[in-house]
Every structure is written in C-alpha cells, then in structure tokens.
Length: 181
Image (cartoon, rainbow, N blue to C red; front, side):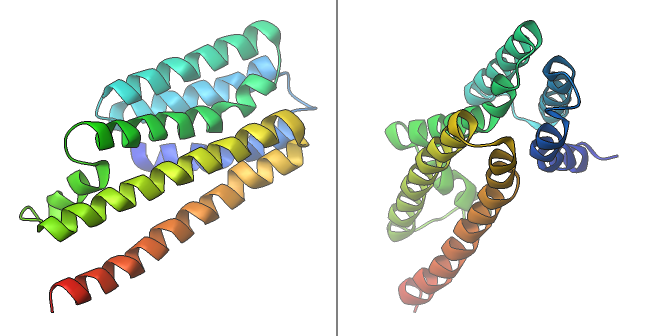
C-alpha cells in the first residue's frame, strides 16, 4: 500500500478508533494507533523543523498515554497537528516567502506582486483557521464526550478544511480573472 494512502486512512480512522475503543481497549494500546499514524507520515514528510517537532510531540503524547494509560493525550493529537501547522504557516509569514506563495510558485514560478500579496493573505487565513480549529479540538478533548470529540475531529474538521480549500479555490479563480484580464 502506498504510504500516502495508508497515512490518509489512519488519519481518518484515528478519531473513530479512539471513540469506539475508549471503553473497550486500554488507552496504552490505542496509543499504538497514534504511533503507527505518525510512523507512516515520516517517509512522506520533508523533515522540516515543524515536522520534527510534530513527530516529537506525538511521541510525547504516546508516551504519556502509555505511562498513564489515559485517553486524553491521544485526544490532544489534533491540537498538536493544528499547532504544528500554525507554527509552520506563521513562521513563513515572518521570514521569506509565505507557505502558500511557496506552493503557488511550484505552478507559477513568476508570480506577480499581486499574487504574492494574495498568497500572503491566504497564508494568514490558514493561520486563523489553525488557531480556531486547534482551539475547538482542545475544547472537545477537554470538555466534550468522546463521541463529540470524534465527530468534530474525524468529520467536521475535515469538512471545514475542505470548505476552506474550496472557498479559496473559488476566490483564486476570481482573483486571477480580475488580475489577468
């Protein structure tokens, strides 16, 4: 099985497995699923500082879940992922090209100044998304039932990400129409 497919499958199944297994399987065994999820990501990641910190953070969560035999550290993984994404996107706003500009230049190396500004704004919008999504993930981990945590982190958060991608795509088409006409 291709690494990306396995990683995507594990990422989607993870919240469901935590929800279904929390009363049936000891958290220390569920921690193995998080470990496997992180392990499948490693071969596909460009090992950046954010990727290393994210992997290290996940290992800490696994260690705490195993040592304490507690499910809460496992439920904090989406918070960690949002924090790592916020750090990577936010850092790109401070130094060098923004994250979205870097991605845009893969398709359009001669990005015009208006495009650079647009990609910077999109990067800022993703930062806001990661703050809000991470805060909701934290709230569901600390205060919601396992079913609500699973629903938000395994379904709703992905739907919101898809809506963000789709909305940005439509805005980009409009932006290109206005600036290339």
